[in-house]
Length: 200
Image 1 (spheres, one colour):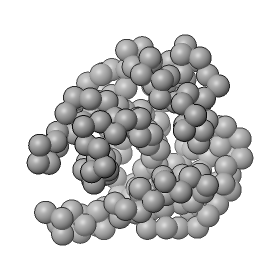
Image 2 (cartoon, rainbow, N blue to C red):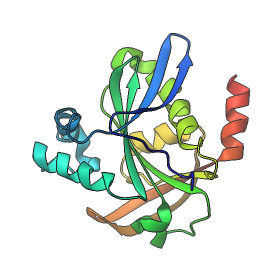
Image 3 (cartoon, rainbow, N blue to C red):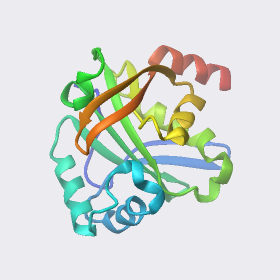
Image 4 (cartoon, helix red, strand yellow):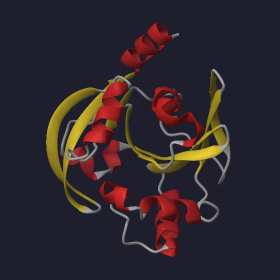
């Protein structure tokens, strides 16, 4: 099974360089990364992430639990060594979103949290988006990416559409944080490769 990539805590799993930016993806370390994650997810602007009420230890314990799940993985994305994004990937067959759409073999679900703009500033997403897509589709069994941002989170919906995701239906399902009204968006491997060829 090569749908989701993982490795030891903190291990670098993927690297790509674009201009003067090097983006790396690391297996999340729930202990070493706990302070950073707690600072990110408890900001007022992190309301859609649903963890703002948790203590540092509760955030750590949440991701330690995620680490035990073969169907869900968490990653820390760095820009020139600086942490900028919390990325989560999962097999939709083993997630509540499966009640909201017809899951296909090779689907990978994803969530991302932009924690810092880092040295990339306004141009950050133009590099980060394709880098994360490249990482998520690097497994041989990965065929399509599926994101389900909160339908009210216009910024997140705009970010995924800006890097090529196509809109699907608006759906409602019971998530780990309660009922969720989500905008499904999809990106096939073929479309991602076509967009990468145009950009390259």
